[in-house]
Every structure is written in C-alpha cells, then in structure tokens.
Length: 66
Image (cartoon, rainbow, N blue to C red):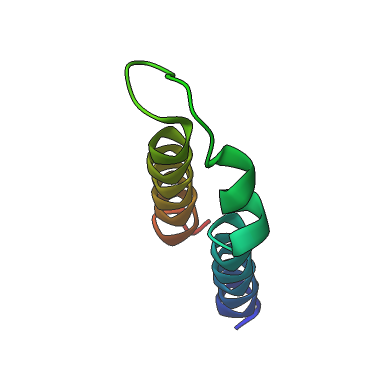
C-alpha cells in the first residue's frame, strides 16, 4: 500500500515537471537563433526534456519491489 502511494506521488511529480518543462516561459527562452548539435535550441530543449521525462518515468515504473 505504501509503495503504490509513493509511486503515485512520483508519477504526479513527473506530470507536474512535464507541465513546467513544456510551458511557454521556458520554451520562449530557447526559441532563439543559433545551432546546438546542428539543430535549433528549441528542438534540442524539446527532445532533451522529452527524453529526460521518459527516462525518469521508466525509473519510477520499473523500480524493483523489495
């Protein structure tokens, strides 16, 4: 019971983190001219944050139960 509650809280935190990462003020910061790894900074931010969220989600969901 406690383990499922902790997992639910972590998933809720990841949802809020995703909302923050893909919100307008942060996207406006990276919407500039320039190139990072051959791509515009906004695309690098979007793909990097998406990859981070997927990795954190995998860690939370696939965590071994002791």
